[in-house]
Amino acid sequence: MELIVALGIGVLAGCGVWLVLRPRTFQVVIGLSLFSYAVNLLIFIMGWVRGGRAPIVGTSAPVDVASFTDPLPQALVLTAIVISFATTALLLVVLLAARGLTGTDHVDGREPEE
Image 1 (tube, helix red, strand yellow):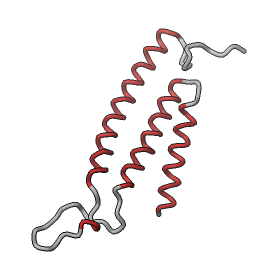
Image 2: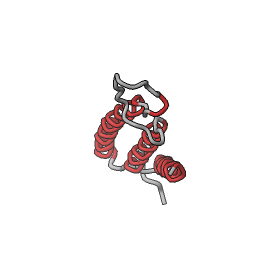
Image 3: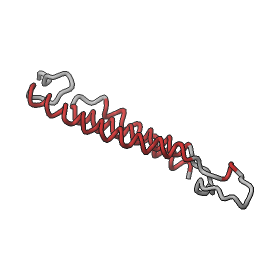
Image 4: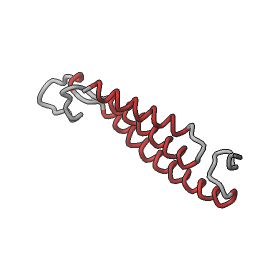
């Protein structure tokens, strides 16, 4: 299972970096989104405990902290998802404005000459 998750994170990060290096702005926005998904998945998996239980502690039994999942990475990922959604929306608005002003969607603002 760990190998599949590691390969998934690697593929998402690799595709994100490849798309960020593309010349079109929409591809850059999609690449940033894929890269943020890879980072979110990495942070979320860091708090994963095999056979982990929900972080709710009762008062009747002694607490074994090692068997509970950590809620902090889950809260960080939830916050990062909201921030990346807002950033993607802002980037798309800037992309549309730049496309309207320059007439092209290249990162450097001009079409390549052939």
